[in-house]
Structures are given as C-alpha cells and as structure tokens.
Image (cartoon, rainbow, N blue to C red; front, top):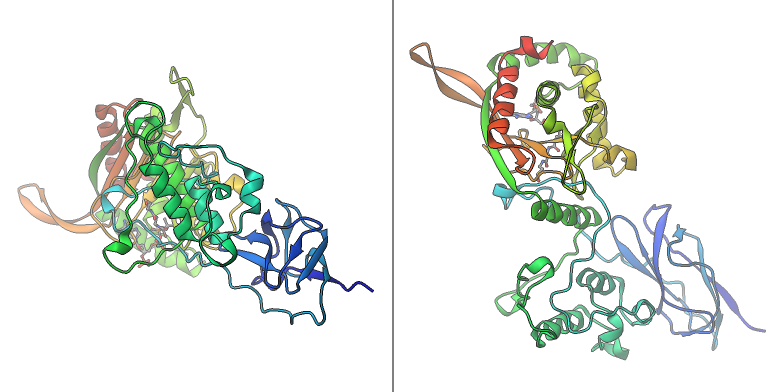
Length: 439
Ligand code: CAO
C-alpha cells in the first residue's frame, strides 16, 4: 500500500500567520529529501519548508498568498523506497537581521517614511526585461536568493545555476546583473536608469576585502522606496532655528514629577506637538498637500501628526490623530503607546496613514541639526535635535540659556523660504514662551 505522508509547517518561532510567498512544487512532482516545497516569509525572515521524504507529491494544500502557522498542512507526499528520513529540525530562517536603528552614518540626510509597498526599482538599461513568473517559481534557488533576485528585478528563469544540481546562488544572480549591465544598450541613448538617473555601477566589493551581505528588513525596504520617491519628487530646502526652552524645561520638570507618579513620561515632544499645531493653524499651507496634477493645494482641516519612531526593524511613522484636541498628558500617553507598539510591530494600518505634517525627533539621541526628508505628499517636516545650554546675548550680557535646535524641511513648490522662516520663528517663539503654549 502506498505510504502517503503529511508534510506540515515546522516550528517557525511562534509566528501564527506567516505568508506563503512561493509554492515550489505541483501535484505529480518528484521530490528529493530536503527539497524545498514552499517558501514562507514573516516580517523578520523567510524560510523554506523542506520535504523530509523522497517521493511524489500527491496533494498540495497551500497556495501563494495563504497564511500558515506551525502544523499547517503543506503537501502530501507518496514516499518512495523504504524508511522515510527522520523529521528534520525546523529550517534555519534565512537571516534578515534587524536593520541598524538609524541612518547615523549619514546624519546630513536623515529621513522618515511610512511603510508602503516597495516598488520594484527600474532595471538599469536591461537587455531583456520580460519576467516569467512561472519560470521564476520553478527556478531552483533558496528564499534569500529569490528575494535578492526580486529586489534586483532579475528573472531567475533566465539565470543558470552554478551550484549542485544547478541550484542558483547569489553570485549567479549578481553575475547575471553584471553581464546585463555590461551588455550594449539595445536602443540608442545614454546609459541611465529610470527617469534619466545614471545608475550606480555594480561593484564586486569582495575584490577589495572581506564582506558580508545582510538582507534589508521589509520595513527598511518599504521606507527606502518611499524616501527615494519623496527625495526625487520634492524640491527640498531646510530652514534651521533655535528655540529658547529654558522656561519650558523648568515647567516640564516641575510637571513631570507629578505626572511620573501617574505613569506618564513628559518629554519635549508633547510640547512640540502643541506648538506645531499652533503654527499649523497660523500657517495652514504647511498642513496641506499638492493635488496630484500639481495645480492646487488641498488644505486639511484636521491635524494628524506623524511622529518618526526608531524601531529595531527600521524607521516607522505612526500618526497621532487629532493632535489639536489633546492635552499634554494625553499626547504623552498616546506617544508612549504608539512608539511602544511601533517597536513591537503591533501598529494597525490606519495608525500609519492620514498624517498632515511630521515630526522627527532625534533629541533623545543627540546632534545639532539634520535634514529630514519631507514625508510626501505632506509638504513639510520638523526635525528636532538635542537641547544644549548656550551663551545668549541678553540685555548687554551673555546668559546661559537652554536652546532647542529645530530643522524644518519643506517642499519648495508649495512653501517659500520666507514662509518657512516665519513658521519656525513663530514655533520658536511659542516654545520660548510657555504661556502661548497653554493657550
Ligand atoms: N533634547 C534633550 N533631551 C531630549 C530631547 C531633546 N530635544 N528630546 C528628548 N530628550 C530626552 C527625553 O527627555 C528623555 O530623557 P530622560 O530619559 O532623561 O527622561 C530621553 O531624551 C529619551 O526620550 P525618548 O526618546 O524616550 O522620548 P521622546 O518623546 O523624545 O521621543 C520618540 C519619542 C518615539 C520620537 C523617540 O523615542 C524616537 O524613536 N526618536 C527617533 C526618531 C527617529 O529615528 N527620527 C529620525 C528620522 S530620520 O531618519
């Protein structure tokens, strides 16, 4: 009698809804021990489900796009030969180590973004851009190589594998890209990427010294695409200013003591949010978006502020809704809740959309100024750096004052330099005189 074995998803580390991104076999296929049947991907990693048996696939129980968990049936295999191989340990996830928390290596251009679907980058003057999805699925390659190929827009069906049994390696994909880049451009024209942007040449860094390669997290890839889009579409200018927060700090400390007993941590941010809302009301063009045809300005009558949060998986921008209707205490509570859940990956989709203006605060970390990238289609973003006590000339003498650096990046298609200077000056004035803030 035929020995039909169920193959289920092994222990995948406590995830209970992992995406099936590829099904690698069909009914009737002959599989070898350890041959991958499907590829799963969570937010943190992707992994193959291998067949513990050699035999013929009699049933495939999942399809691309399904969500599975440990124990879900993947396939039924009619085992060939005698004793089946012992059940293997769970496959090691393809490493997708947490991305560095912040773009600290490029302080001149720190950025924010909401995670939206990653758009495939335009292939640099490819010779053949056709993509055979079926062939891609059938190609013999592991999940990391598949992801690498997808990111580069490489159709695995066209790549020949150099490893055992023709398995495609990362080097094969890189070699294919290199070859494609080296090929003569099909039609006349400059060697440029999409929109006439010259591509950065592919370099084999290993020629110069040892290297390791780490896949980017899903969030980093998504925010990267958004940032790139904003950077290319928005003519950015950044206006810098310093607010004297000496009195605000004394007030914050005094208030903070009482509030910490209630479990509320009062940082600068709730004050900033209040001050920003006041400035947005005074300068409504900063709480607006350009219409898609670029012919009009859509002025929003609500104040939903995006706040950049540094998470282990990359940057996220949860949105604090109706910030104008909340007091300092409620803002502090909401911020703590949103940033905690952002770091735990527990935000809901509607908490990541609808922002009208963003704030990116690096004040808790350090720095004196930076250039945030406008979170388009918003038209401005406020960057906040760390306070420092500085000598300020007042009434004929230098006095020590606590100064808060502000960096406002704006879309110059919508906002003039003069308006930006007025906006930050007004903001600094409000922060410098907390009586205005309490209005
Ligand atoms: N100057 C001096 N100290 C500051 C400060 C500032 N401008 N802003 C915050 N601090 C202090 C806080 O008072 C707090 O001090 P204590 O621990 O002694 O009380 C400490 O720094 C840490 O603050 P925090 O970061 O926990 O709280 P926050 O309200 O300032 O910020 C949040 C919350 C979520 C914005 C922040 O944690 C964060 O993730 N920031 C990074 C955002 C980011 O990555 N932006 C870059 C985007 S561009 O790539």
